[in-house]
Image 1 (cartoon, rainbow, N blue to C red):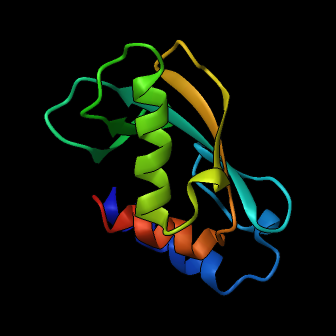
Image 2 (cartoon, rainbow, N blue to C red):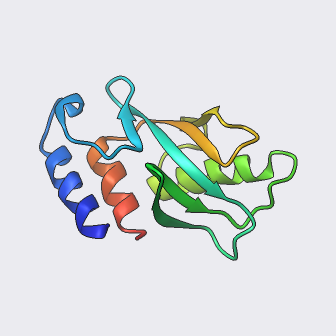
Length: 121
């Protein structure tokens, strides 16, 4: 998986129009500097981490419990810190009460996004 993400990252970094780049199934572009990320969340884990891919989604383990939206807030905070974007740049689009979620991440390039996620694997 790490090799897969590095290859994808190299293809995307040199491409001015990322819509033509081959992105993983869990990542799609929304405008010039925003992306939709499909996530399979695993709340209640021992630590926060990117755990690979699961059913065409990026699997992320979260130390927060799945109670009262704490895991959703924790997921947004984890991704914003990991990607180096403001917390307001990560928004939950769908999947508020489910493990499968769709998030929108703004203010990041495809190359940076792929590189920072690949570093976690």
